Image (cartoon, rainbow, N blue to C red):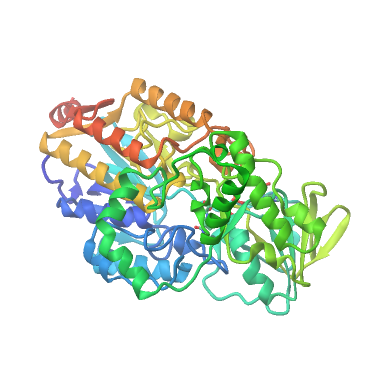
Length: 553
Ligand code: NAP
C-alpha cells in the first residue's frame, strides 16, 4: 500500500488513511499508534474536547469504579510513572484532566476535529475506500474507519408522559452541563438507581432541601472505600507495573489485578464464607465478586453473596421498609453491573431523603412541578434522569454505516449485533470497532481492553501495508461461529438471567442478546493473537492491485 495522496482528486475530497470516530481513551490511543506508523489520520469527536464518556458524565459524585492506578494507560511507562492519581478512585474532573494531559503530552490535538459528529460512512466498493460525512457538511475518504465511539456514551432519555411540561430544570447524568449545578435549597427528584444514581444520590442529598429517589429496580452496591492514595500506595503500583499490567492483560478475567479466588462459595463452611465476604466488603470495590470463583456460575453460590449484601443493607438502613425496598430481589448479584458507592445506603437514613418504589406504583406522568406516581404528586424543583444508556450499540447505530451492496449496519444488526471477535462485521471491509459487542469490553477494565484492540488493529493494518493488501473483512462463517460462541459462553453463566443493559433489556424493542464476550480478557487476547498469528484466520484480505483493477473497470 502506498502512502495516500492528501486529496482524492476524483471526488475532490480530503483523503486519509484512517478516520477514527471518537476522541475518548480509545480514539486517542488509536491516533497515537497509527501516527506512529506514519499514517494520515483524522479523528472526529462530537464533544467540545477529548475524554469521551468522562467528558459527558460530569454529574455530582462521578468517579471511576476501577482503581485509578489500574484505570489508566499502560502503553507509556513514562506516563504511568509520572502521572499522580490523588485518590483510589479518581473523580471525573481528574480523569478528564488526565485525558487532556495525554492529548497534550502526545501532541494529539492537531489531528482531532472537535464538535464534529460523523453522520455517515459509506463503503465505495470500486475504490475500496470509505466516504465519511460529518456534521459540518464535509465528506472525506479513508481507507480504514475505526469506531472508537464508546459503549456508554449514548445517554437515553426515557419516554415519560409530561416530561416536556416540567417547569424546573431536567438533567441527564450522562449529558451533564459543564457549569457547576448547585441544588442547595431545592427539592430534587432522581429517576433511576443504577451506578450513576448510586454515585450521585449521596452528593445531591447533601445539597438538596429534599431528595426523592424513584426506584424501579433495586441494585446491589458495594462500598468503594475511596480514600486519598498515599505515596507508598502509588509507589507499590509504579514499581510493580510490569507484573500488574501483565497480569491484568493475560490472567485476569476482567482486566483488573486482584487476588484471584481458588475455590467455590460452597466449598467453605458458613463461618469461613461469611468471613471472606466481610473481608471483601471491608476492602470495597468491584472485586467483591472475586471472593469465590463460581459466583456467576452457580445460583446457590450466588445466593450466598446476595444474602450477605442484603443483610448489610438491612444493617445500614434504619427504616425496615426502606431497607426492604433497597434489597434487590429480581436478579443474581453481579448479573447486572455491580455498583460501587460511597454512603449510598446510609443516605436513606437522612431525614431529607425519600425512596419511592415505582415498580409497584409506576410513574404516571411528570406534571409541571411534580413526579406523579401511585396517584401521589412528589413536588420537585429539579429532575435528574439517571436512566442510563443505549449501551454498546447505541452510538454506532446513530451513524448511517453503509457496507457492501448498500447494506447498512443497522439492517444487519436489526436482530442483534453480529461481529467476528467484536472487531469487525462481515460486509463492512476495513471498518474496525474498538471494544464492540462480541468482545470483553464492558465486562472488563475498559482501558485494558481498549489498548488490546488498538494494538491488534494497528498490527492488522501494518500487516496489510507490508503485503500491499487493500481490504480486510470478516468471513460470514467465522462471524457466525464467533456469535454462537459468545452466546454459548454467556448461557453457561447467570448473566442472561438479569434484565440488564448487557442484554439490551433497558431499551424497549432492542433485541435481547448478551452483547459482551464473557470468556475473560486473557482468554480473549490469546484467541485474537492466534487469529493474527495464523495470517488473520477468519478474515479475507484482498490485494490492493485487484481493488485498483476493479476501480478501473
Ligand atoms: P443503568 O445502570 O442503565 O441504570 C439506569 C436506571 O434508570 C435503572 O435503575 C433503571 O431501572 C432506571 N430507568 C431507566 N428508564 C427508566 C424509566 N423510564 N422509568 C424509571 N426508571 C428508569 O445506567 P447508569 O446508572 O447510567 O449506569 C450505566 C453503566 O455505566 C453502569 O452499569 C456502569 O457500567 C457505567 N457507569 C460506571 C460508573 C463508574 O465507573 N463508576 C459510573 C456510572 C456509570 P431498571 O433497572 O428497572 O431498568
